[in-house]
Image (cartoon, rainbow, N blue to C red):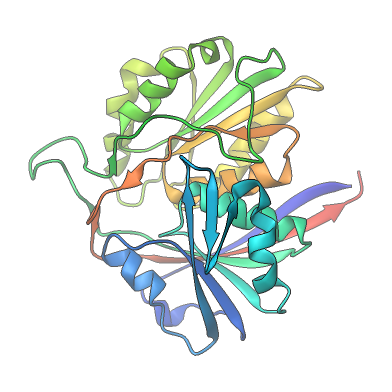
Amino acid sequence: MIPSVIFSNSSHDNSNEIIIYTESVLFHGDTVDDRGKSAVNFDSDLITDRILVSYDYEQMVLTVGDGTLTADLAIELFTPYIIANKNIILEATTLGVPELFFAIKSLIDLKIDNFLIIYVEPKNYSRTTPAADSFALTELNAGYKPIPNAVVDLSGEDVEAGVFFLGFEPDRLERAFEEYQMISSKDLKVVFGIPAFQPGWELNSIVPHLEAIDNCSISYCAANDPSSAYDSLEETRLSLREGNKMFVAPIGTKPCGIASAIFASIYPSQVGLLYDHRKKKYKRSEGVSIWHRYSIKIRMTKS
């Protein structure tokens, strides 16, 4: 059986235009800006529970609601909410990439083949200073750390390729190259978000990265479309030699992170995640722009 993912995307100016199902449980992260607060407080009588999810990368423990376990046991934390026959909504504006991965992998392992994801774009991102070319989005940390159940040995000869989704912070890619010099021998692809959330924003991503990507192939996908990002990942996977693996570094837009989390959950034996677990800065963005509703359906088809 071969897994396939069907994305159904819709965009809205207001949250009250978004259709959700009755008896829904919404999983969310911490709020640091206007859009995060709006997303978590998404006003609907159809949401019966709002559950906070957080991951401590230093201790490798996951907290879902009142429960905390080592992250490799994530499914045990999500199961009580999922088996209650409620519909699942993942609020991706506030959930980080690791939390999204743990939630999505748990859903797939529990045979939940249909769920919703909500994501809200900002009107603007915060810069280091009002006139600066650089952005103040995340805090520096100890560097890249493994994500349980998505670990890949980058020094292994069977790791053939890697995909980096890139955003506005070039030092994240530079640090990956510094910490994992062995990946320079891999088949590397960098993916920029084009079309961007807003016209012209793509230059904020492309220009700062130009010096670092000489040895990488360059690709593009829509910044707000997980299905476009997923297709880019699938293109790389299908190019792998038999028995080989790849890694994904989702350090670009959150919709690309959504695609990466789904992809790593669907292909656990072939795909690992490379992530630097940066903490989001308070008020990292301003305002609330477009609301996105992503309906995800997982289907198993015969080969």
